[in-house]
Structures are given as structure tokens and as C-alpha cells.
Length: 524
Image (cartoon, rainbow, N blue to C red; front, side, top):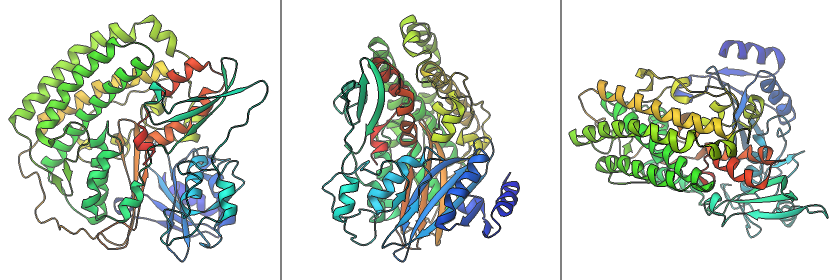
């Protein structure tokens, strides 16, 4: 597929220089620098070939701003990096939000953090920030926000009419978990439009990364997706190991998989309890939290933490596992399997739950691709893409497991996918425990000051919520020149306004909850 894409890209745009990259070092197969006037046509090229826009980001090289687009395929491994260089003084670029819906929020984010004007974009108001911002936060120099830019960026204010009423769902609403606000424009009980308003918990993690050494930023990864922190921890260390050429002992890779899958199970059953509580059923919440506590007991024994894990290290692990961990993990496997009949009785076969979720929030395949949703939400749409299979890392290539997928892609289908993924994780853990080798758990002589080679990398892993992409630009110092986090909750939330339109307000809770959003991950 890579060769075919390269040939077709050269044929369609003869003036472009397409470079074949070392995927193992870069995380993408092809790269190409495009003139601003051609970006819409190039985006259309990838859209016609069923690529999705994984991420769009900006890097400030002072002499110029570089807009980076990563295009990927769902069912085969082919990643293409497209770059566009623009003037840092008057940064202007055509929007591609009309081609890829996922660009709509990415371009708003770039606008408020870098000052890039995307011509043709329908709404370049603040997404995360607010009217009091005087400088573009991610520019390398203190570039002021002009009065004209402040007027254009001024905070979102939805329009109302005589026949409609705008109400706030959150940030205090229980189902938005305290830090997400959604403005709903209502016509009676029906939603005309939904407008997510972000930034209530924004902490500038990407700016922090530029001012910390690579090891110093490691604890930050556990504060992004605090429910699935192990996957973020693993994504960051494996990205750096790939960039810096650090090898990892085989034993450490097996332990990484076991710990990450345990955390994935705890995340999925945490979602199950919280989702049912959002819909008004409290009993399942108590059962799943009882089960989750058993997993946390096991993970606490090796990590010293029950939530924001920072267990992995560049080159291995913080410490090795012991017999108590192995025994505890086997007990967890037995316990979770014994609970499936209970979950089936309380939830799967519950007529109230089924009626609240069946046919609600249906995500067609094309909508899933255009919005770049991932994880269980994508797989429920009938696209069985999982980074553990498509781009194996750690020792996932040694594991034999199936990727569950759905057909209807409604809230009920997404629930079933997550429940089946718990069994998948149990199977992976069992295989890893059976195969785990003896040997060291840490590579000796990993430098305390990591100074990776000059260049960039885009590395992906599968978190409980979907595709986590980490884009790092290294300038051979001990801290990243640029670090961009492509988080799955951000992409999955993008589809909510489309799903909510035309539904009852009560269904908004069912749709939003089915997406399994972690807001600190969005407000990174």
C-alpha cells in the first residue's frame, strides 16, 4: 500500500518531492512538503483513498511555522506526513475542515495557540483558551495577540431564536463529570445543535514538555488519562526509545503488556459503572468498583500507585514483578471472568438499558473516518482497527487475540464492544504470564540525560479510549523541541455534535457517556 500511495501521489502532483522514510525510525512511511495553495488538493487526494486525518499540528521553527498533517489508513499500515511551511509574521493557510471533519477542532487549536489563520474555516473562536490571553502560548517567542485577532477569537456565544433555547449541560452536570460544558440549542425537548466548550481543566502539558527534560516529563503522562494512565506512560517511553534507539529487555516488554492490560480492564469496567450511573442505575456501579479495587491492589504492589501510574522507564521498568504480583493477577483473571454472568444479568439483558441505548448515537463508517474516531467507538462502527495489531509495540506481536467489532455503532454496540474487550485483555494477560521470560527488567547504562537524534517521530499506541499519537521533534538537546499529543478522547468528542442533533436531551447523556471521554486528556 505504501508503494501504491507513493506512485499515485507522484502521478497526481508531479511537482512534489515525495520522500520514502524509515518507518522504524520515523513512525511514518512517506513525507512530502506542500505549498500552501496545494494543501486542499492534497487533502482531497487522501480523502479519495479513504485515509483519515490522524492529527494536524504546528511547529514553530522561528524562521517559519510548519503545519504537519499525519494521514493514516484504518485497515493497512500506511502513514504519510504532509508539511506546509508558512510565514510566521502573517501565518495564513487554507482550511481543510471541509474535507476532513477532524481538522475543524485541530485548526481552532492551532489558531489560538500559534495565531495561524485558516481561510475558509467556519469558526475560529477560542476552543481551549479565553479572551484574557495576550500572547500565543506555544510560539517560541512572545508573539502578542492583536486586538483584531482578539475580536476574531472572542469566546463562543451561540445564537438563539424565538423558537429555540440554549441551555448548559455542564460543567457542573454529573454526566459531564465536572469539567466539560456542552451548550445545547433546543427546540422543545429536541436538540438542534450541540457545542462542546473545552478548556476548564487545561494545563498546557505540551508547553510543559518544552521546559522539562524527557525524564522530568514522564510523570505528566499519568495525569492525562488518569483512568488509563499506563497506556500513556507506555506510549511516551516507547516513543522515546524508538527515537533514541534504546533497546528494551524482553522481560520488561511482557511486564509492560500485563500491567497495561490490567489497567485497560480497570478502565473499561470503571466506564461501565460510571455510564450506568449516568443513566440512573447505581447498583452496577458498586459491583464494578469492587472488581476494580482488586485490580488496583495488584497494580499498587508494583507501582506504588492506584491511579496516576508512572511505572515504566526508558529502557524498562521501575522495578520487577514478584510471585505476589503473578498470583494476584491470576486471581484477578478468575474473578473478572466469574463476574461476566452478573454483568450480563444486570446490564446486557436489562430492558431499560437496552431501550436507552439501542439506536442512539449511530456512527456510520464514513462519519467515523471523517472524524478520525478510534478505539471501541471506531470498532463498533465495523472498522476493526487496533494499534496493538496494526502497529504492534512492546510484545503485542507475540500475542494471539481477536479484535471485536460491531455493526450498528450505536451506544449499545459500543457497550458490547467494551465488554468483549475485557475478555480480550484477559486472554492477552494469560498468554503473557505463560510466556514471560527470565532476565533483566531494565537496560543497563541508559543515559540519565537523554539527547535523541535530531529529527521527528510519530508513534502510536492503543489506549482504552483509542489511538494515542505522540509526535516529537528533537533538536538533540535533553528536552523536546516540540511534543504534540494526539489523544483519543479529543477526536471522539468531535463526533458528538453530529450524533446529538435531532435527539432528545435525555439521549445526549447516553450518547456522550458511550464515547468514554476523559476530560483531562482532552484538556491537555
